[in-house]
Image (tube, rainbow, N blue to C red):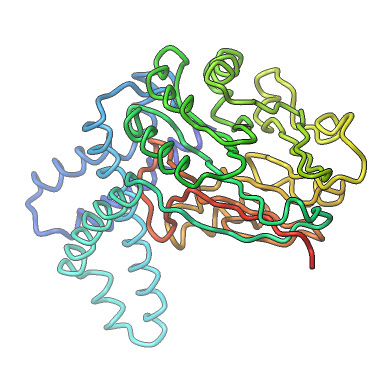
Amino acid sequence: MALVVISVMGLAWLYVVLRGVRLLPLGKGGKLALSLALLPLAEYYLLVMLVGGNLADVEAPRPLLVALGWAFGSFLLLALLLLARDLLAAVFGVLSRSLARALWRSGALTQALVASALLLGAWGSWQGLKLPEIKRVDITVPGLGAAFDGYRIAQLSDLHATRLLPADWQRAVVQKTNALRADLIVITGDLQDGAPAARAADVAPFAGLHAPDGVLAVPGNHEYYVDYAGWMAAFKALGLNMLENRHVVLERAGAQLVVAGLTDPQAAAFGQAPPDLSAALAGAPRGAPVLVLAHRPGGAPEHARAGASLQLSGHTHGGQILGVNLLTRWANRGFLAGLYQVGRMPLYVSRGTGLWHGLVLRLGAPSEITEVVLHAPR
């Protein structure tokens, strides 16, 4: 997989050089210098792996990570804008060869696209790094008892505590979440990136999350990359109830709600237990509605057929960039962000509260702290 990413980014660099840098009003020396400067930027992931040994574990200072995130994001946007221009030229070529030739060769248009990529990169980086807004979602849950009508869940997802989103940022998210005064707080995976010792201060604010029915969490794929067992112990020490193919039963005035948490499919690659809804529901009361917490939304059809009443997920980050998010939708069985109806089961997919340092941009896919309000059928 790493080799594929490195190859794709190498091709992106070559494309930007041939269809972007070559058209800029620079001398041969300037074009060569710019092309060489863009190469390490294009291979940002490779450099991170060479320096840190793991894409999930970056210990650079935050200002440097922000600057690199903006520069790398701007490079990606430039490649996409150049591709869009060339596709447009191909379409116009059917109607007017002269217009297509002008688009294909225009240095002025290329300069405008470079400026646009830099500005969009700056805006997208700000959107990605700012504190998330509260998003309220009302969901009618099949079989939910009247006692749980109006029950409120604060959902966090993809917090990705790192040097990029450090303790102060996480503490502000915790305060904003606690201010909702929800009945229950859930975290649907990808809480961090890195090793437990390196991230200890950045995840410490999670201990400040409070709700009457507690804080339930499930692992995401990023929990497995560095010391999974160490992270599960660390999260439990912070007061998070990690549901690894387990469930808890919530009660209100004689009514029950089962909350079942699943591990992530990434587990199998690290010798850990893969997601297993049957195991998670072992011993659960029959007839009670089941809320499934699963980092990835892709298992929703199977969970719906197994009788789950509601699923909350994350993982996709909403695709982060409008247009490109179609690829994210395809990679997640058609699920991207928002509320879906899967058979009789509602599925809600968060756009994520934070983001991974490998792509800082958010354009058209804002982050969120989700206030999920459950309703009994009328």
